[in-house]
Length: 457
Picture 1: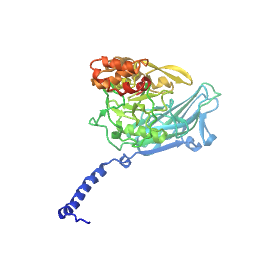
Picture 2: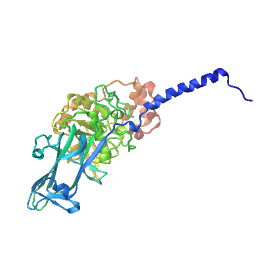
Picture 3: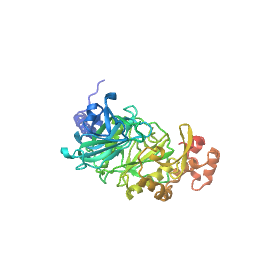
Picture 4: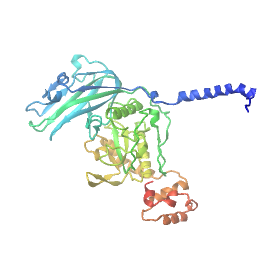
């Protein structure tokens, strides 16, 4: 039997629908989408033909038509220099990256540098120092481009003032014998404008860094990746428990003007230009001491490069390479290292074993990038000296400092017990330890899992 809807209900139904619609539409409008990401500009300049090379200044080198065009030392020369014509960018840029192919016989060296400026140089200044920034070295270390099948690359972008519009390349060729020469086959300089987006301000929201493991040491506060608006999408990370920490230093000798713009440029360069699956650094610290979340997935997101075969947490300090990190950066770094050490049962002041090319080696649990990969340019001498000397005492003091509830302390205590102790013995020990006696049943690890599984939790 059909029943009529009462008149008063029929009267209010359209009002209810309208109210619901007014609530939903603003929420949909505020939902972030990939299209909300700041506009990023990326372009490139390549030298790879005879015509490209011959447009520059050559001293002690020659251009050959091998592979379409390449440069090498002239006959009977052991040194030579190439300087490009000024590159006019298609838009002002704040960062550059570089990828190149080269042949380096034994006892030969290629040294690459770049410099920039805001305005077009007059002809008489094109090859002088007038109006140009200082030369900045391009050092590949152990970084390679996946997109270019393993070509040499700089791992990090080089920052420039945001009004920079011209770039120049210098290449120095060196050999210990006239019978051998380094060869530069081609080079691509990518320039980026990532200024658009949230600015760096002291009021950026911060949240405690997270991990699946409970710690006594307080978690440092960080700015989440979603706030500095890098790439919203990210590859699903491969998981690996870190066994060490690799310290990197992003050299900002040219002068840091905007941290968030630098992070956006770095992420864009490493993912879109080099073809890496994500940002290579789990955490980054700027001169103001602000900690930034980097690689998606946290410390257990495995980085398949820049660690010489180790599974490590990658921490990058943004700092001029010839300076000691600021006191604010030191404070943040110490807290981060102490927290990571306890969260993953690794002693930042100790050592661990790694297998390199089939051989077992001892490695510092906190190692500089250039210690695990000697060709790498970072960290600088002063940054590393601070970490291995001055930072030791404050790290030791903070390791385990902080308040924690008894229920959270029990899993930590269990993880620290020797593997030879059985689950029954562990429960018995917990029952004897006041104030933990009443909590011996609360630790699911003690109750049901073998020690090996517990220690990996």
